Length: 277
Image (cartoon, rainbow, N blue to C red; front, side):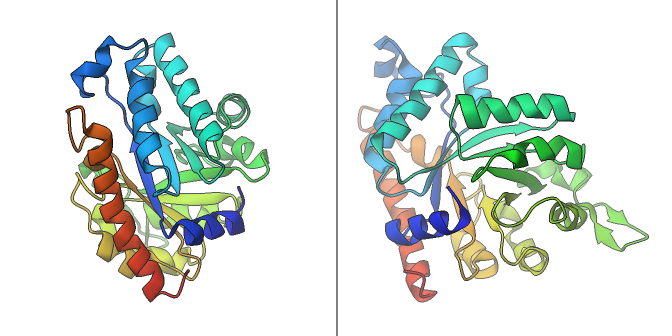
């Protein structure tokens, strides 16, 4: 999916919502544990009730890898189900990979060829040669960690370079633009760092931003839109726990839809106000 297609998808669905499929077998409703593949059955129900409300899904690979081979099977079935269910979904592998070039090339093949994701989250710490293999795939995206929502982000991401006067996350944003353009690169910016979005938009005015932290982590959608939206929307706002674990009963899928619909309705209003419809 290219840049224009993603923008058209957002306008069509009146939504820039991304649901994180951070599916923890210890948290899913107990009645699903009797099924052959509880994680897939949980994901399937969430997808069935929300796919018309969202622009993207983002499985967090750690939750699947933790279960060994069975987890990878659940992931593969989930991806295949989404692809068979609808063509109107942007699919992100939240894998946070980053390694030397030949290893990154294998990661890129894994997520773009084997699993047919549209995008993968990547750590840029090792520099251009660790990112380049991901950029060789047409209409696929690398989502670089820039300014994350966790407490430890301040350990490194805000460090000042005394020579340039720029913080590390700002240097990541600037340098990455020499590697690829807005049609291949997105950046992760945590919703709990919404006050920094205004400065980030000065550096990357046209790129899409993947914004986690709305919902359970307390990020404000209104502030994210205020400081982060551009003329092509430029946002994919993720909510995971606040949606998928809205209920731990047999009504979990319907509860997830209600939570997703609340966010989608708010997003539709912001898109209308920005004349992006």
